[in-house]
Image (tube, rainbow, N blue to C red):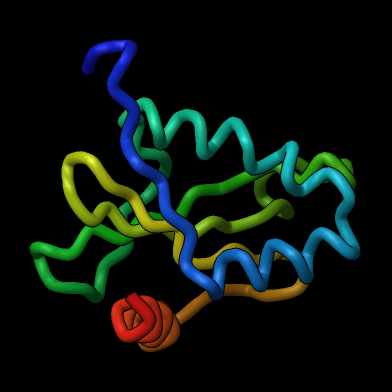
Length: 119
């Protein structure tokens, strides 16, 4: 990948809504998420591909450190994203591991369906 080519990172409404809600409680969330977005733009896929989707659907869950708490990545945020193509990534949602244990396949599929409907 060349330095002048960046992958397009788009934001689902759900991601923007959750980021805004979390920013009320965690002032540094945007600063915490920024390096993750930059790495995705460079084509570096982070963390774990989630199971439960078709073999041609690439959904990942990235662990993000919450600098407002001093507990490391395990108690930080989970950023769920979809690799739409070689040139496009869609950020689906983000949540705090302190407030929510996990997200289901059905919830992720609903976010994708809503995004596709709105587009």
